[in-house]
Image 1: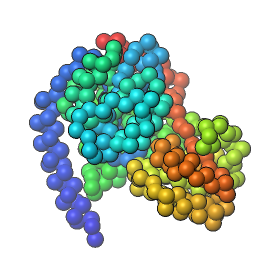
Image 2 (image 1 turned 180 degrees about the vertical axis):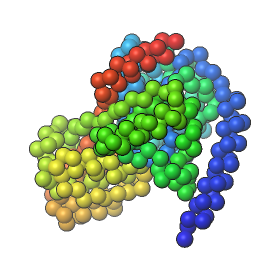
Image 3 (image 1 turned 90 degrees about the vertical axis):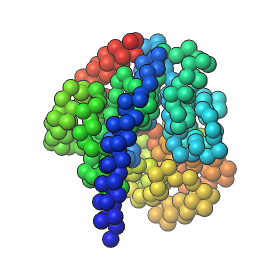
Image 4 (image 1 turned 60 degrees about the vertical axis):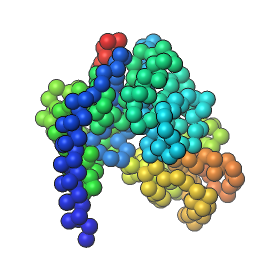
Length: 345
């Protein structure tokens, strides 16, 4: 019933996008330090946050001092007027997204500037810190700042999100926009077949002939709520697992659990869901019903943590799946050579 409306809305979105792109791209400002953009072509989880964390860590490994520029998602806009600088000491700010919480935890020496006007945020950061470069988080569609390197994540399990622009599909831009990208990172290749990866690579080469294409995969670590590392295979193999998530691509999270031998019962919430006490009780009750252990993502844990620690429930076992992004051997070398060149410009 909603399809005609979505088609019309998608057409109007396409017109607005073209006008916005044409007008705002001509007004982009240049920062005095190199800018790396990490973005995507579709809405939903494509691995931007793990890649942003990996990029920041690798830049620091090259003795560079990066800062991250983020809109902070919609939560930032509530009651906020100016830029917000988030550090590891104060990352529990209530008005930033779970992605910001997670990045601040993992990148203790990297300042994160949040705000809708990110050029001004960058200027504020430069006044406060000695910086060598910026990472523009979710920046592929952000026109006000000139980028030195556009890195785009493409999810190998769902590269085009049904092939239509939002709201009919999940594309934020037409596939042809990939021509702007200098680097394309294929994520979740561990969940795709060799044949489908080959076809996708050929398509990407046609869409962006000059881009470097890197294949990446996730490696996982399981922890309990107290931060103790657990044996992933020992706990998940042949276990009933309730996969709790409020992320853009819950199916990929569930498939990763199944690869470890788990019998998965999904419990999905909307992307960026704010968990309540009632949600926590529901999660526990469903887990007890299925006699399942609970596994959630790092992002979801950032919102579930206060509820869980406030009143621990010993009747169910609870674990957090941590993810790290890795390239294949050839990709690792290309990746480091590339960021070394752009980072020291």
